[in-house]
Each structure stands twice: as C-alpha cells, then as structure tokens.
Image 1 (cartoon, rainbow, N blue to C red):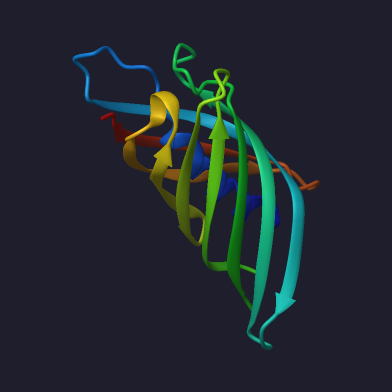
Image 2: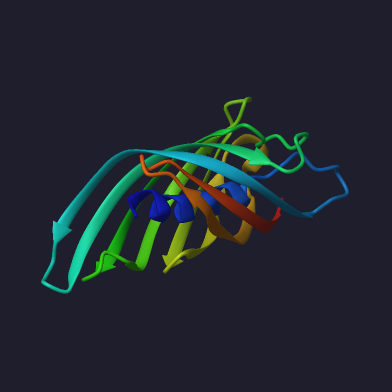
Length: 159
C-alpha cells in the first residue's frame, strides 16, 4: 500500500520533467515510466476510521524519448496520505525534486485520490528555470517488498 501511494506521487514527478527544446518550441508533451523504492514510512493513527501515512521514496525517471534531458534523472519524493479504516488511500499530497545529469533541478507537487494522481511543476533551475506544467500518473505494478512502477504523462511550457 505504501509503495502504491508513493508510486502515484512519483509518477507525477516524472511527468513534469522538461527536455531541451529548440529555440522556437514553447510547449511539449511527454510520457514515461518510473521505478520507485520506498526508503521511509511512518503511520500515525488518527481515529478508528483513519490513519496518516508519511512516506519517502526514490526513483529513476525513464522517458519514452531517451533524448530528453530528464531521462534517467534521480527523483526523491515525500508525501502524506490519509488512509481509511481498510488502509486504502482517501487522498494524498506531497512533492518531489528531480536532478538530471547536468545537475539542473526541478520540483513538483502532487495530489492523489485513490490510485490516480496529478502533478504540477513548482519551479526549477538551469534549463528548467521558468518551466510550468501539469500531468497525470497511474500505478502500473507494486511488489510485495514495496517497490512499484508508475506510468506518467504530461504537458509543460518553457519560458
């Protein structure tokens, strides 16, 4: 369950990545898959009907187009989820930072409702400075040991 939640969040982050664009290009659509490993989680009981889950996870972003600068970037995410009495995700929110091979970084915020997620670019440095964007993510698989894979897609604008 923790991995599934983190997967939704992380997928959101992948979709936000921005490739180098030709000088005349302003917007881009991209998609890919990311594989996450949870590194920390903590559950806090709120009531008999709800728990609060805090998580941290790490991933490698894999764009469908391997020429994009964020392909194979490192991603770190943190999030908080509200779980119902059955341990299912009601809602969750968090953020991720992504660092590419040139050490340029960008950030995104994510929200999840159930198994589906959305994300939004918060800002960046270097080639990602001034970038905006939004997208969606969906958990593809989750292993018993907590690892998970997420499919992401989105659109963003470069300044």
